[in-house]
Every structure is written in C-alpha cells, then in structure tokens.
Length: 133
Image (tube, rainbow, N blue to C red; front, side, top):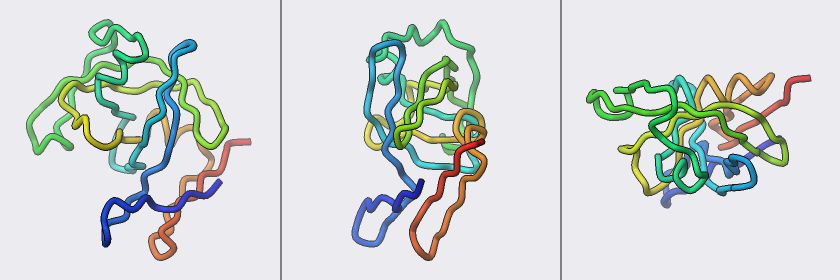
C-alpha cells in the first residue's frame, strides 16, 4: 500500500497517514506521522479518554526526545490500529503533554514491527507499507 506525503503548508509535506485507533467497539479516526526515530507509537491522552482507556492503569514510561529534552510521562496500553483496511493488535503510549493539535507518532514498536517493509521515497513524497506474509 502506498500513501502520498500529507501537505501541511505550501512547502511543508510530511509522511503522515490516516489511521483508525480502536478499543473494543469505540473507534477514533486520527493521523500519524511515521517516525523511524520514535521507539513506540505515541498519541495524545485525550484519544485514550475517548476510547474509554483508564490512562494511569497503563505501563508508565517517559520520553524526552520530542519534548525538547524535558522528560515527560506516558502510559502504554494495548489497542487496535487500522491502516488501509488492515487491522492490527498492537500497543501505543498515550501522553498528556503531546500536542492536541495535529497528529500522533508511529514508531518502531507498534507500527514498524507490523510490516515487512516501510519505505520512504522522499523524491516522490511517498510512503510504501508492505504487509508481513
């Protein structure tokens, strides 16, 4: 499956894709920036609230890379992630201090590990996702 980079502004395009996050029967349509430097999927904690997830009952961790060096807490929970009609059981971290405006991050654990291949073609502004067989 191929996705075009998402145009944020006239000269700003990023590898952002549409997705659906679900917990049981509750679903949220959202966007995720494919970030090869992110260790795990990270979404704003408001998404967990919408999904009926008790944030602080998750596995607590912290991150400092996306927070300008200041350590911030997150909570890991199992979720379902649907991308291009494919549905995966995976995990995501929910972080109260992640910007509410915009998108989540799709990282190594919970996104990259779901696919046989995740390829960026910067010149074509295209991302290719190939399912595991």
